Length: 504
Image (cartoon, rainbow, N blue to C red; front, side, top):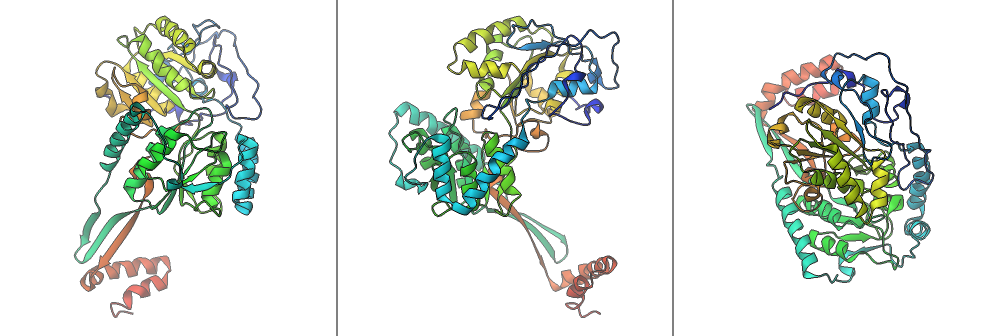
């Protein structure tokens, strides 16, 4: 077991927009690229600083880290060596790929407003503009879609995932709490389902029926009466059969045949065919995320699950980790999008040349190899001296996915504080959590695992407190309440108590 160590040098936690000018010596840094759906590309940039003449010192244990590039320019994954880092250098290394949020909000704001005022017509217009699809119907009930015909092998895979996700999320039910805080004063906490929820299932660069299960299964378990699934249509206006199969099985009630900001707006405002929802959950590109964030602060009165950015993984590996497995885990996230980031934290003895060779070989064989290669350009490996430095680095990076591919990985868990989902041991690839182990794959990214949790059963519930007093209970508690109200100058509060007790 390890006691978590606070890093004073990282107290500002600035993960976005760090200047490259403060990076350590002899480093070639990955280019900062625009996200995959951005209309314009940010200029790429590499920076080689002059050799430093003086070592930096810091008070933290992480001051032992120094990032110096030992990789040549043609390596797929840039490698940094532990030696010494000052605060700005660490923040720069941990910074995610930049996103121009101001231009994204400028793009989604008129879309949101047009859907609010024009409803289904606006959704049709934007779907034709962005997806090149002419919709006959915008939102339909699930039973109105044709029954999908899939192979037995495919249905068996989704059925297994469904059972495991259902089992894990059913176990998350917590009983109501009841406490008698003093004689005659009973307090309770009870749960109720959110009435109507919207779930967003991406379908741009990859079809994700697994996301349907991850969101609809806990929504159904929670008891949500209306579950609207938004997903981009195929060119003929239909929905991918695998997505329909999972939606039917998991309890989706309505299908909104649209993606992007227009789909989020339709669920938030409601349209003639799409029910208005109370909360929107699910991953998406930066336009989907921006729409969610804008609408939760609008008159739409809608909540969201969490802010999110591009997908990411941090892999901690020791000398016993199979280089092929390490490379496969890194690529499993790199193939998500060119704005994804993957990080390898290498303990002593890790053969980074072997990992590099596997990365190159496996990447060449991937259908999405171009996407993976672009993601690797702003990803990296860093050597650390031992367990404690690896834990400290991971906790500060706060990854969406954390793979701990080390001997006795279970003993690391008590010290791991910040991650969306953790994968322990040699035989636990991140892919199992993405699909079928039972945990949820809708997770905080971009460092948000520092303060947000992934989607769970609680994401579809709201909690209410209840109190019930007898006369005797009010007689005991009331005078104290009346005195506190008097101190705060709220006389009506005081009188609500004293009038019941026959006091002035």
